[in-house]
Image (cartoon, rainbow, N blue to C red; front, top):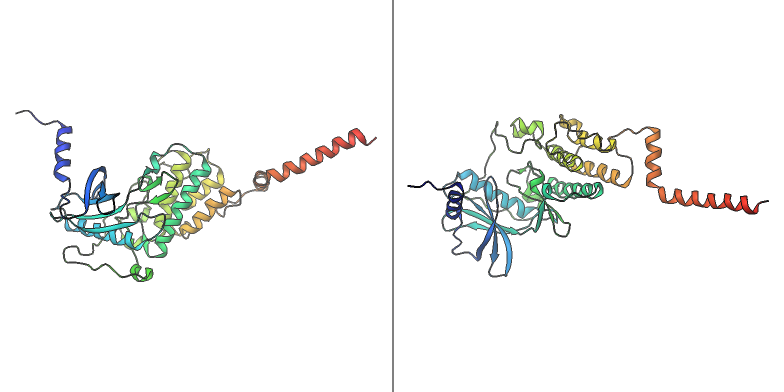
Length: 329
């Protein structure tokens, strides 16, 4: 008997995993990708005549905790209505028991696949990520897995934070949003994260998150991860050994990255809004709070920021001197 090739085995496995959408209004168009909990498909909503993204747990006999996390991720997305967070349309279970949810189909590319752009554009992306994450934090949700693969830039420049599967909900997030809660079921109990379980991605996880104690993780873990995103965008070196990145990065920007990625959470920005404000200040040519510039640096920064009026004044003075030299005798 001839052994099947790896490619043939993958095709068979994909065919076996493809969800049976009997009884739903969806039909599979193609596969988009696969994550830790499930597979994401491009699907068509027959009733509305539009394409959506359908996330389905891979195997019906998968661990109950994975199904619970899928339901929890769906509830989290439903509670976070923000332009920078992908909206969810539907949630349910297939005939084989697999959990699924439908969400907006994002057309674009993840952050790490974007073509090279200028520094101002890249800093603008970081600011947009901060806006979405700050909204989530304000409603008691910490992402805990921010990385380039989980940030999508759409065809028209929209920036969306994806994959909230390991998000941590603190306080009564449902009540804070002023909407009804999604009832828990015996089939999908609320999952818990035990001590010693590490959730996140190396290179983007804060030290306290990598330690595996959920009680130590707060919103400043996301500050650390956004600092790592900023490092990647500024240096082009993912998971760089040095948090301040390349020497070619301007010192104030390196200081922002270094403060965001400080090993001790108390030394980081207090929240992502403060981080975004420093990034915006650097982009606008203003002073950033995390860098003590000297007199020469301040003068150069002001000269660059006000270059147009300075050039106009110099042009006027040069014209006056020329006029005096020619007609002043």
